[in-house]
Length: 259
Image (cartoon, rainbow, N blue to C red; front, side, top):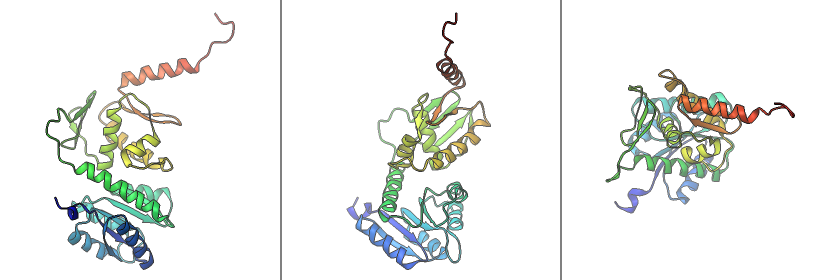
């Protein structure tokens, strides 16, 4: 493969010229090939002809808002990673962006360095996901009780029933299954699933855990458990029961002099 073919292609969509130019210059400096669009219609056109590896997408656009652009891309089968730029720092906007298939979001005003770090993290994650199956791998299937996840085929079944997951949901579940029984902190999950090096966005972890629970719990007993103030773990029902007893024993202390 030629070196030029490995240069990541990024589409920057924002109706403010100064922001487009600022982000373009920063990403080009960090080795990306950058195209730009000033509105939603142009963004959809550029996504079709330029085939970007990632889109930095403003939510507030003059014609079609960024959420609708993302919805149309996903409806057309385009799974290009999307990082939303939003001036509205509310939980509802965050959840909306993630639920429709966004990979990340950055709140305006933003640090260019922070945005570049997010872009690089999402590109790394997408690159790992796109790597072909390695020859000689023995078994790419993770199994915990009646839950089965095939990393090579990107399929999940519980009790034999297929479970449809987004890319991020799949990565999160795979990581929880790989460390079955261990309590994983929000910081660990952010670093290893999202590729972020800090723990300031735990709301995203909580949102995706709730998505997984809704899809898995309808097919059997709960598997993902919350360790209050710490993080999450994936345990079989019998393991969860033992863990609760152990916690109760640690919490309860006999009164002095008790028999």
